[in-house]
Image (cartoon, rainbow, N blue to C red; front, side, top):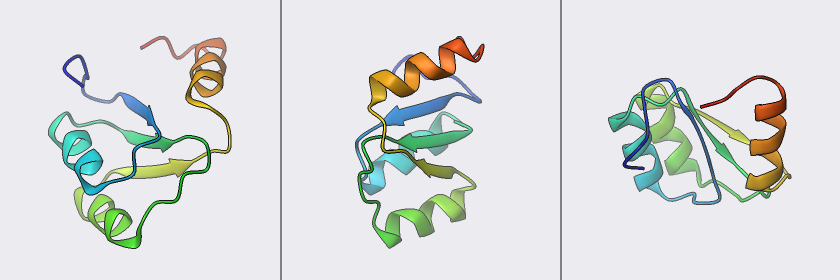
Length: 75
């Protein structure tokens, strides 16, 4: 996430606690977990503590990225 910027949405299939740490460090607006990957309660608790929204989708990262791009989200 070296190129992550403040306010960015991060689409990933990773669900470990370090995802929240990185999202918080970069001030991401949310983390979107693709492919319906399960997110452990301790990770959700940490996300809430850090003010990071965690969203889940059954779609792939590729499909989600394409849909967001079509909606006008370019970065």
